[in-house]
Length: 248
Image 1 (cartoon, helix red, strand yellow):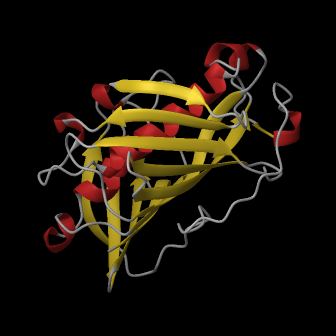
Image 2 (cartoon, one colour):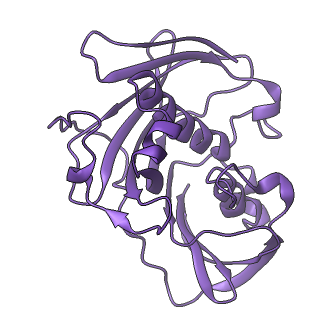
């Protein structure tokens, strides 16, 4: 449940005041990483919606917006009943990547999570990637801010991957676009961690979305442990669906 949403006076910073609920949390009452991804996707969409660029209007104009890469630094994961403030804004785009940043804080201003994500525009019918400059439904900005999270860049997988498990894509995993909803990849990346890492707090999380998965697909999860970093890749019939890095 969201308490309040509004754009700041700069016209580009979108602020959401909300509360963390029991169903969003893990066994230690900390917000699931998949819920962080859900907030990031939902608030990016709502920011555009409140600026007159609803999903339906964008599709009618020949644009679908797809999240491509994400990176988050977790200073402290928010917990059940905590009231938080999330801000997000567009930053200077790249040729094919729309750049967006996020800040999760307590009402008192304590930094909780810092993040960045990159998004692609694609033709809704052909799925062909469209240059950001072709998206003329709003004026882009040249804002470039410093963030303490890792860059949402391309993730390189190590060669010593071993199978961690597998997950069939179920009906509850499918979103309105007809494929595995992006937040579920956070669960796929963390549900199969070695048991000694499962309850440890995550410091940094990176995720690359590579190929859409559909109902009935079997995603095999492979990983490699390198000290305090775990690399995770999900494959469907040897085709990479996602790649992730988790730092503890």
